[in-house]
Image 1 (cartoon, helix red, strand yellow):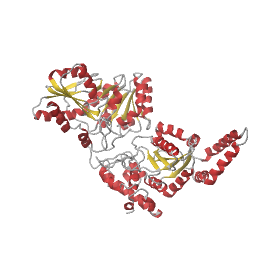
Image 2 (cartoon, helix red, strand yellow; image 1 turned 90 degrees about the vertical axis):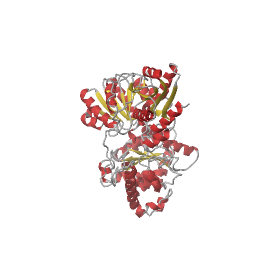
Image 3 (cartoon, helix red, strand yellow; image 1 turned 30 degrees about the horizontal axis):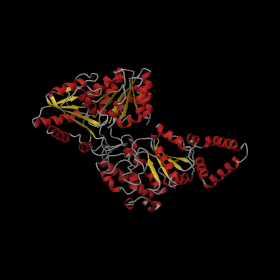
Image 4 (spheres, helix red, strand yellow; image 1 turned 180 degrees about the vertical axis):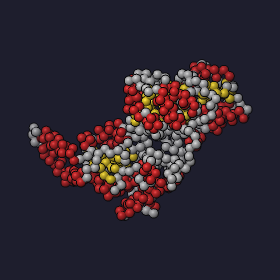
Length: 620
């Protein structure tokens, strides 16, 4: 196999050009085979194979730098930098990350995981290169979805002022920004980036500028006239008008064409955008037909494309999806907003039934929140569904545009807590901390699927800023008999005994039940309080628990700083509690990728570790 000849960065340059297509096919076969076993981001990687090969053929890594926006499409890059064997442990605990990681390879120059960041990071590297007098090439690769994020345009606006080379590759695998006008576009691209043209153009401009009194104005008029002609024949004039040279569109699966356009791009003195057209999921029929399903996939059967392990129970996203459709029917003021994740957040059904009240704003969380604030101010009841890790990008908008005005915006925060294989950039372990710091924000977390349903209905009728956080994965379907009505700031007793009180929030109620069963078997009395609200904390139920319990344990899936446990401990301090207390939470550190159960054990929030800590606390 040709792929076996690639064991180090730049080894691809030893491959015969006639064999590039064979290598691309081998890479696709390798990725399909490995990801079918481990799970991962398949569609985006299959679409970027030739693009990645062309970049590695055009650059000299790690001297030159590639910044992959989000990083979903970096698998081929990992293969071409000698990490083939790492795919056996892809996204597993202690194994290779599914995203670029600086600690993993010198060829990964910037850690990514969130969208629309690559151009800003690349521009920073360009400035660092220039200040240090280095001569490397810097390339930011960004997808058409990611350029829906405002941060990308902020960076492009800044990059337009450059007078040194910076290459931005727009990997367009969905929408078409501009139409390929064929030979004229290709001809002008070649002319405008040829050495002779660039030198002559600069010489002419310099001579004209030297003409007393009128030089600068003549240059401006020439540029305006040239721009008018470009509008007729050149796609991408949006970028040209910003001051960024546009090259393309180019077939992202044609390696010779890609190599040619990258040669041209490297000649440009300034920011240059290369528009590449690719096909998501290329080479694997199921991924081509269902790109959303294979964006991030669990292990699957290669023959059918179906998951290896079919789900038998509803997950929390399913529950949210069902309740939203029902609420949309009952109340025509309920509307739904997502940031490019209608499938992931469960809003696809709502979109299908109530298309006029569904809004996908693209990868633009900040806009999503302020847009929701506008909807609320106008009389609607907006439900914003965003993953915990991504909602943190809109913190200022939550503070300034929603909570300051006390607007009735409902935040349904999916993937709260440990999410597993995507790792540090995606773990939803900060939302309690950053949301609870905002005056006027109410935060809830359900113990099971029925309580999630009740909380969504409560939140829609609440009349102010309110958030519901719920985890990824199968919805807990026990404790159905405990379904007290949701009341503002009130928890509920699940089991009321004495000695040990487990005050659990959301997903940790399930863990608390397991802990209690073991403690009961050992002969200990143990109560469970379902906190329900992370903010405000139910002070009355905490004070009640201090009467008959000499050990109070808080359990949450959030970091310690600013978390639920801190707030309960504040209550205990205020009421002068003299007993023992224990805070079970995630340490103030980033949590790497891996199986959720393994990660929970490693960070000490699994049932076994909690029991050990409780017994140790009792013996103190």
